[in-house]
Length: 280
Image (cartoon, rainbow, N blue to C red; front, side, top):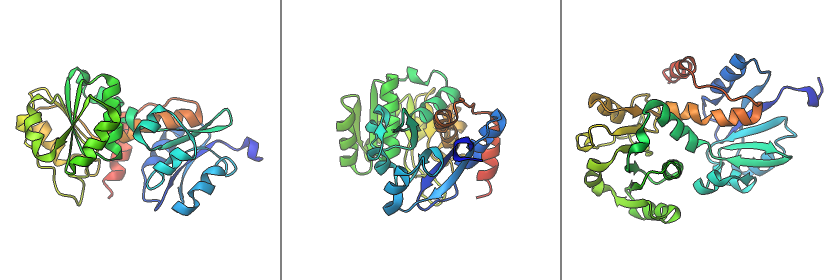
């Protein structure tokens, strides 16, 4: 079989190449949609990343996912869209008209997961976002794009929250960590973008009783599947959106760009990834 007739393949580029669920997700879609294609993990150290990306198509790839620590460099080596520029990092690469393009699908992964898990969440006027890292940038961009009027951004280092607020404008209000309780009573949406609550990390200590009765709670952490924050929200009867849902939804657009079909996030796929996570 010649290079021209080989089935299209994409890859995940990271260093170290930790156990990722991306191959499981994309192989499921390739199989269920009947598409001849492949998806592999490529462990690429930082000093080799530039060469790897420049030779991506020569290596037989139609595109790639990019994970730590390469997301910022991927932005500079490609033509980024508005989303990747706003977040300052790219997690998806593809070719269009012979040019390497990039985007950040964390934004639509977060927003689309909220739409599925908590329809009508965007009626909230105030959102409270915890953390000011890369994931927070994607969340804040998505919330502003969706029309949320005020995004309160709390971070233990207030200067980082201020810097992010300066980047996004008047809708974003930086907040000291000890000011969280003051905002909770009017937050229609609470989003945790920190590692608090993750396996091996301290729990997120927040009094959810202060939230309005119909507030939505989202957590980007997906190991464990149900964080203490989400468990407390469910106990209050609040709608929740978990990190696994975001992981699945953020993979949709990359697959569509590489293989030409838009896949669906199904209950079967979620169960498959859940079972794999439980092996950890």
